[in-house]
Length: 128
Image (tube, rainbow, N blue to C red; front, side, top):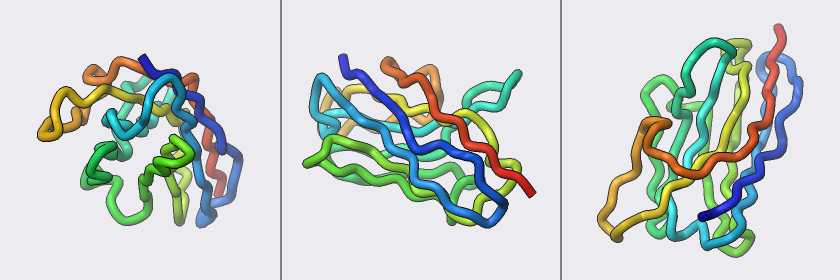
């Protein structure tokens, strides 16, 4: 099972950008679906983006398309989330999560319950 450590969270003004990092250890990220989730206190974790390790195909919920970009650096074994044009409603704890791919044709889950490994989270705060 992989271990995940997030970093890069910060306090920024609306319109700003951040790049979050998820360092993967214990196995190759290429063998996993790796996702970013966002959680606001008192609410469930919502998926922001997911990337399929071996193919580098990514998927975003409709509400997240356009401003966020997920990427995987296979050499560094790290997954990144680029956040652009940040808005106050993007404030929350951002978590990295991973689930191993059973086969090359496996699809990645879009819900938090579909992931086995989680990081501790990194806080993003966007002010007006």
